[in-house]
Amino acid sequence: MINSNNVTHSHPEILGGTPVFVDTRVPVRSLFDYIEGGETLDEFLHQFPSVKREQAIAALKLACDSLVADAHTS
Image 1: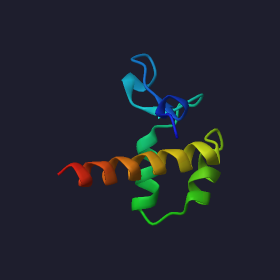
Image 2: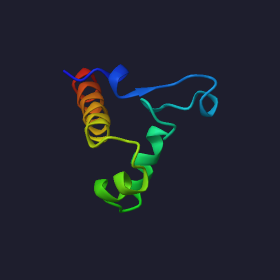
Image 3: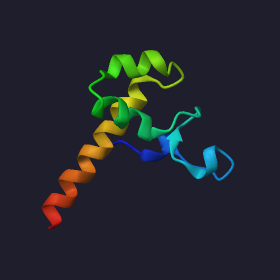
Image 4: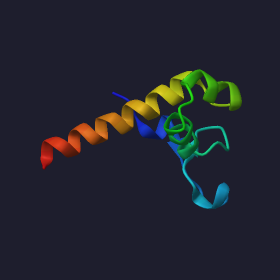
């Protein structure tokens, strides 16, 4: 199972506490903004080379798992 602590974190001194990918200063929101804008995962990774592919995929999986879990509890 994916542990979000290995994928993202936030700290008040890093971008004012905005959630970022671990070991980067790249906001997680940027991944979703790229996808929403019609860009590919590869384009996102090209623009933000400090983010590992595994981190981006894990973030997407965590978001999906959260949505599915919420749907089952409603």
